[in-house]
Length: 141
Ligand code: ADP
Image (tube, rainbow, N blue to C red; front, side, top):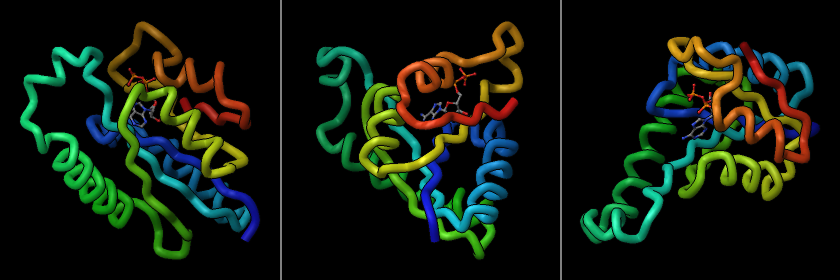
């Protein structure tokens, strides 16, 4: 196996990543690469907002998101592709960039934006990942 690919998924709109997933799977197969699938639980911004959530909210969100991501991966990623799942918490684009660095991936593959967001060609997180990641980024339209 050589290299690895990071595929960030917005679990709130998983269908918008179908094309990106299919590209990432093809590339992982072609290169014999490990596929890392990541979802980020977004930050609530201020500590004040966070204080209204139940104390065990973070732990439950992490558990439930991890389980949802594992289900997504088992349904969508073919069994012959080696895959690992990752859940992080924070500012979406920062966590994607940090995960790419921490995992030492060679390539990030993501969808440009949700299909219904027709006013722009590159969503806010996709744009920031392109700008800040040190790795090559494949934006799938
Ligand atoms: P839009 O606002 O149209 O959804 P984004 O830039 O937020 O545009 O989304 C583009 C891509 O960014 C998604 O397909 C996904 O790869 C990544 N992304 C967005 N949100 C998340 C998230 N919570 N966790 C992981 N990746 C995400």
